[in-house]
Image 1: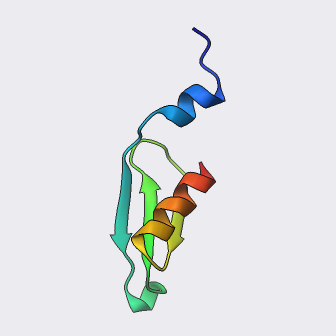
Image 2: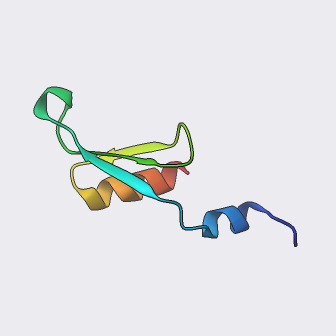
Length: 56
């Protein structure tokens, strides 16, 4: 089996979501637990998840 881009995109990686306080801009920050450097943010949890998946 050849492991191409589609293979890795289909894996269900854990996404961590944290609240950002107003001093840090508010909203939510998200990142992949096991993949360094892939991050996202948004005004809602859903937006933060969409943004981090888009970054991936």
